[in-house]
Amino acid sequence: MRILNFACIHWRANLSTHRHGVFLMLFLLAAVTPLPSADAQELASFRGTAVDVYHTRTLADAARETAAVYPAVKAELEATLGLRADFRPAVILLADRAAFEQVTGSRLIVAYAVPSKMLMVIDFPRASKEPFSARGILKHELCHLILHRHVPSIPRWLDEGICQWASDGLAEILSGSSGASLSWLSVSGSVMPLKSLDISFPQDGRGMALAYEQSRSVVDFITSRYGRNSVQNILTSLGQGLSVDEAFQVSLRTSLPALERDWQSSLGTWPRLVAYLMAHIYTVLFAFAALSTVAGYVRYRIRKRRLREEDEEGMFPDRP
Image 1 (tube, one colour):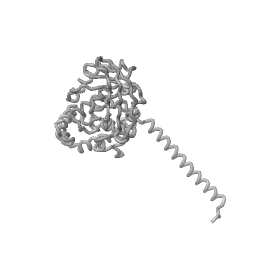
Image 2 (cartoon, rainbow, N blue to C red):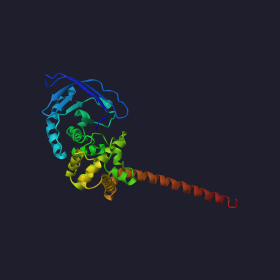
Image 3 (cartoon, one colour):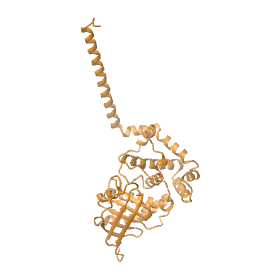
Image 4 (tube, rainbow, N blue to C red):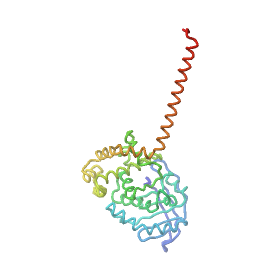
């Protein structure tokens, strides 16, 4: 998750040791409304072979583990993306959920990356619980740093879609939505145009979750139709300075609008619609039962009214 309008990250450290106290001041501004700054926190640090990990005192073990798994995560992403992570990033592990939410302005977000500072910030207690994994979240955020290192102007939907795909489907937000819901949206014509997701995602919970879901679905469609190397080809073209439309034309031999139409058509197939109904079978049954109850009550009222009118006609046959 990238926080727009990054203002300042400042720390003061004693460089004579690898583990030292660090005073971290995070001042992040949201894209539209300024957020309150997080309180200053005393952090310790752990210097790994390829990454620096800053952490609250209670997360010392997590910091060592993060530094230990980083080289493998880095190698996996380099192989998947075809891009080098030729930088030394910093990771901040926080345990204070309230402070983290104060910075992000959202309860859904469990981590975010700041590409301009090669920095990843993780709400570790939540990031290490189901449906997340600390390793997967680290991989997702590092993916953002790598992409922006080589393709600074990558569209938001492609950025998030690729990073979910590269980190085994893991996003950085809490979401109760199901992938099958996109099928229903495609039938109702409610899928968001990719162009509307170039710069930013909706800020409401449902809209944000659907934007993440939609971004992952598009990249899955690309890799299933054109192969896993298609992502590397697109990134190579973008890295050479081509526009998004040009990159898709060169890499996939199709235009982005044509690919978007094909993707949306694939969402509305009967197998996907059946999958949606099966995934929401209890909701469907409940709705059907509720509608049946309402229909039965309406029929009862109509029949009762007719019987009353017939009784009145029988009692007063000569009434004008």
